[in-house]
Amino acid sequence: MAGCTGVLDSTVAPRAALTATPNDIQQGEEVTFDARASDAIEGVITEFKWDFGDGTQATTIAGFTSHQFLTSGQFNVRLTVTNDQGGSDSTTVLVRVNGAPQINISIPDVVRSGDIILLDASNTIDPEGGTMEYMWDLNFLEDSDGDGDTRNDVDSTEPMVYLPTESSGTILGSLTVDDNQGGVATEQFTIEVQTRRFQVSWVQNTLDWDYDDYLKQGESWSDNMTPGVGARIMAYEAILQLDQDLFMPPDNFTLSLYIAEDGYRKNAETSPGNITRNESTVAELNASNLNPSVEDEVYDSDSAEQLLEGLLNEPGARFGQGEWIWTIVAQNADPDGQFGLLDPDEGNDWTLTITITVFTPVLTEVAYQ
Image (cartoon, rainbow, N blue to C red; front, top):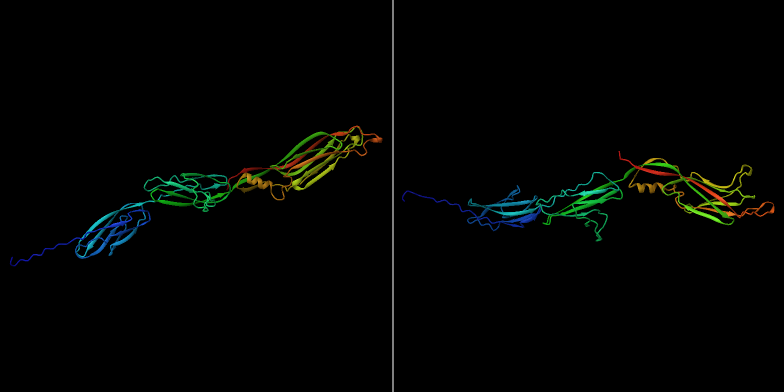
């Protein structure tokens, strides 16, 4: 038509295409996004806008990028492409991010030697709510499976573990949790095992033995004892007493003590008492200050048993801990009778009294201040 002109304006939109590799990942992994198959239709694509669905966006000129997903969940990643004609198009792809288990280990604040420790990981959660497998390595210093690696043992597969302790020190270990969907988390733990504290009081006691028998001349008697068990020996006294003979002089007896572990040997021969005073024939053995004196103190130790062992076997204070051997030997009288007469009594009745003084340690566990 004369005098009229018309202009038909139209904008051609591009076509967006997007792939994600891989689209099923573990938390913290990267996904590569490829939009190079997108078509400008007319002109060229001038801009690729990325919305990764986790609050992160980006703009690129090239249709190829990657992104790390630091949180778990399902994310709709949106791509918008724009061409130089001003047209745009969008498309989405779904990315699934599996979250690793979130480990939560509960350990007692204070652990003493001898305690049984409860390691509780029952509050560990899986973001997807899946079933989890627990693998505890309870001691990095032990190779329980014998493969040469002390840090890959599986000592327990339960959410809660009871770990006994025998001594103070540091326990290092780890817990690995697998969600069976590729999500694995590992957490190391450190437990400081402290000593216990004991008040030691030494109680004085006397140990008594009484023997009696009859020995013919030339015969002997012997007996063994271990008075140092559980105690520190301080002194002993032994008195051998013979019944009065009808004829003088009295028979000669010898009393002996032998402690092999200490190389200790001591003996005494009988000597007649005063006849007018009706005193018996006796032999005596005694000694005092056999070990250092004791004092009540407070000690730190892994256990009462270990502390007792140390106290009773302290260097320089172990005298008498081994076996004691007492021996009595009946010897001939010299001369054998008065006025040339033979002694009609071929032996003698005797009694032996032994008293040993010891200090026994009594332990009472006390709290730390």
